[in-house]
View (cartoon, rainbow, N blue to C red):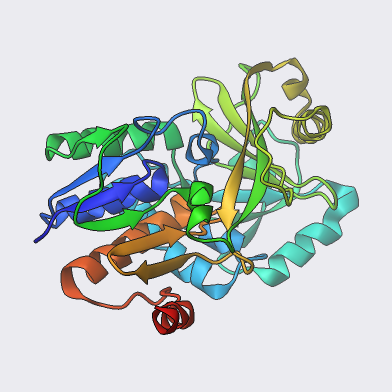
Length: 326
């Protein structure tokens, strides 16, 4: 098979590379940064593999395709399968009822029964869900590729079939991409212990808290319609920390280890696309579902490249318009 060049070493690019390499495709990866790092939105992901929870606002394909993620990642990195917990303060009980109506796969529990450090609240437990550490997962993908002789370089001339996984940087070819800013914090607290992601529902500032081990927690995330990638704002910091304090007062004494913000690539309907223009295959628009949907998209790209199978998320209408203009 002809060589494949993958542009971008975020979660989409590395998942596609892992899937193709596992099928014996000769490939290389080019990323200006030389690999995933603090400047990319994959670095700041929460790492929740929570398709049922995402059903609150996401379309059906996100739920169905996202259910592939936990098994795919478990073959390549450490995955914790402890489910997800969704809670709401007593004054916002209506938010929990609304969340329950819009989702499936949950059971009603007392939060304290699953997370002893949390106060007694009625909660929704999604037992089939999982989570991972995104930075560790990206590192494991890189090591797996290196073991197969796949190089990740910061420069080079693309050869063969090109698979463009550059996120927002691909707007030179995909002008209908938009940025959705997310702001996140990494905290460390020895006074709080959680074994699964917890989503705290709030009419204005819903947040999630994901345990990272050794007292570490990822706290996020805002969702703002802008492609600005500057530092975290004072407003976001205040809102996120206030929500964390509402979840557990001990977070008031937590150390703030890192703050970060980046813009997620999304199309108008927040669903991902695979587009083929000549020898270039574009994989983009994962929105806030990078780690959840990248495995399914990687599988589809591999089937397209090795078998000619058309992905269900192929943007056929746009491809036809492009061909007609050509």
